[in-house]
Image 1: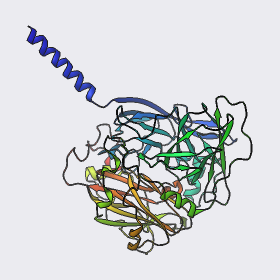
Image 2 (image 1 turned 90 degrees about the horizontal axis):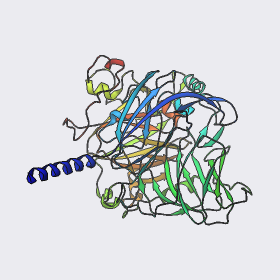
Image 3 (image 1 turned 30 degrees about the horizontal axis):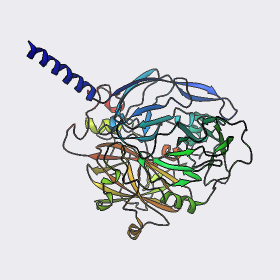
Image 4 (image 1 turned 180 degrees about the horizontal axis):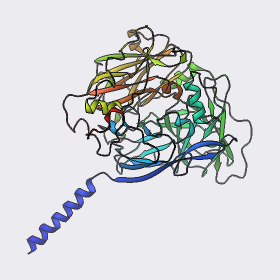
Length: 535
């Protein structure tokens, strides 16, 4: 009898261990609707999530399983993409038109993904049509698991600032402008958390984390706080060497986290975000309020850099990986010696702004991307011919005439590659790769040549998911292709993305195994030539 009781107790404890050993699940239901607000003083239609603008923050922990039912109450198909979440083995959940059918009006789709081995500051936003210009964006903050150390004391508080340029014009009118072949006008303003004025309160003497993300459409932002310095501690999931800055550039699609100590006299101070590399400077302000303050903000709004490209590139080179700090796992970030690996392939991507059929387009290596009626991932899975070709975009710019195509580039699973972004235009570029982070090993002016490799940082370049490329300049990244799937490589400048500056990287392994990639979800939406197929 005692043996039976003991055996039962062991089984119960083992069952508890197994249940508790599984990563937690978090469930959400989000409803997407239109609403009317006046962020710049003019009533306009915006996209709300659960009635909020910006949308609700996803506050999660490393390895959480996210089950999110998205209900589309708009009059157009809709998708959200999870900017910087790697979707390990799971491009099915990436939420872009190359991987997912859009959710029809008055319908829903349940995303199922995991923040696998990630920590840090990220965002989500709409990937369909020009919805991003109407809102629908929000924060994703991924916190560390218990007992995983972080390289700084716990801050007294955690503030999220979603900063970006904004138009008074509706997203449908902006889209019509682009569809007619015309470029967008200059933005009307800058918002911080969807407002032109907001306040953040803290106690004198304490240190707070500020998570800053550029959720705008086209414009780089400089961020600063009157009378205070900022200690950079994290960039898109990488813990950094903790350098101190008076102001920081945040380019479109990028995120950073800084620590700010309230070590000044008890009063209110300006928080400032202003546009970079623009003839007209747009500025938004918020307030840092000391809880023992009785003095409102005063003095001129602190000025920031405007068009100093050299200044910005010099700052970017100071962003370094903290080699001894752990990230989402307990092993140090620097335990992966990327600089000792020789890339097996070099890809050079040159952006351009051709006119095709009398309309403004944007292109990569001469190819301006057009969406297919069937998501590329579904076409690949079901072996549907005629949707895309892996020969449609080349590794190097050819210098030939530009053309329209559903461009896909083939790559081998587990390859280690070098990608050079060559920007021969006079505007700053911002490039993003879904499914990955990558080492930003070099920046430089002019034309890239192999000799530029001598300037690479092969010791402590940080990893991130979005990299800026300065005007008439180049940026090089190294990528370990350890995540099989169909992944979007795109301009984060949304007008350029919409008009063709993107393509898909098909990272393929002929061995079909759940160790490499998950199978198609049972609830996958089917559209285009995939209608009627069975997952």
